[in-house]
Length: 545
Image (cartoon, rainbow, N blue to C red; front, side, top):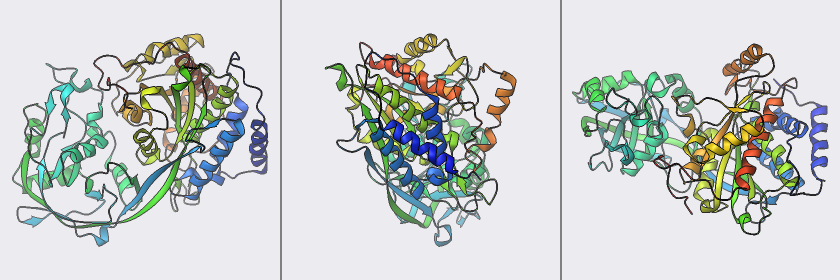
């Protein structure tokens, strides 16, 4: 387990004093990201002192205080009136299966299934208790997609029902190889969309059928995220359905069989746009109980005002999530280590934003630039969702959002990842920024797991703002074979207690990614007009106000 040393404390304090007295801003100066502040911020944010930056935990509060203090020391302007903080009201929800009497009934009897092993459930509306006596309806993929001429609901009244859905989206066919983006996952296939879709239908709840191929992860991921742990959701605004949950494929097969239906036949039918909802001779009965608490977290927003009298009213937003998984007793690879430090995910992005902001302050652009550290990304992009619902800067005047999450700790590369930029006019600017740094854009790959929809930029995209996450390249300059192995070795540490800062890391690649992001942001901030979405893209809609 990593321990915070006196030297690290000293370096962090020294950096704070250094940042408190920045040089005079010069609009003509080149903004060059420095490794020293980035490394100092990274080491501190990933230290045990911040206890893994958990949502609803003391470490999260300390992190917000640190980011706020550093923004003040840099001389940045508060992004929310006279405050750097934006309140994010969150509900912590922990299902109490032992106190719940919830059961699935079909064929006149309850299924013999256990919470965690066979299915999981939780309230989606931050309410501690619900009683159900609701019919189940199979709605295929649960998709209403006008752009694909697809509607799984066909106008059926589903108010008060429990909707049973498949995850992923309709698969490509020989006749339609590119429907729903072919092999790539669209947002219609994400489980978050399914929950939102059920809410729009007025359903009482939704149960998703899990398979490893369609979800892209095993049932153990569902178990770990839903069983015996506190889950978080927004406590205000548009809440979810009364019940949200998953069931294993075996549970679904037993349920459908008991209800007199052939699951495989219904799955095949759901692959066609002629599919209609199928009422099941099955019910959800009983009471669901959960422990619910309200938690206030904060986004941190700081601004470098633009220099152009007119364009300064528009903004480029750089974002990164400050949270990780916090302290989890008896968690981690070794029981002695209960702190999930999240050095790469995402102390790296948060540190990069601080280092970028330091330089942006010294060399401002025509448009304003906001540095936004969002809360509770690990809990479902909650901080960025809260920002999008109550933006601190009008979305109509937000030029773009460039997001950083899990940066390159291995070494400098010849390429940079900009997947998602091709959806908008940012794609050409991304190529220009790469060329100016002697780099190239990494080849795009089919988005099989829906990565575009799983980072904070997506909440901006849903509101019409051109947005994407910038990722590390993989064409390493120094010792490519060893660098690739080092990058691959991070996989087992992802979301584990072993994601810790290592002072021996070569941060040239991290600095490179931060520099590229700042350079691209400055191209946008100094551009003649706001970038737009490409015609025909699913998010090619006017920016929300």
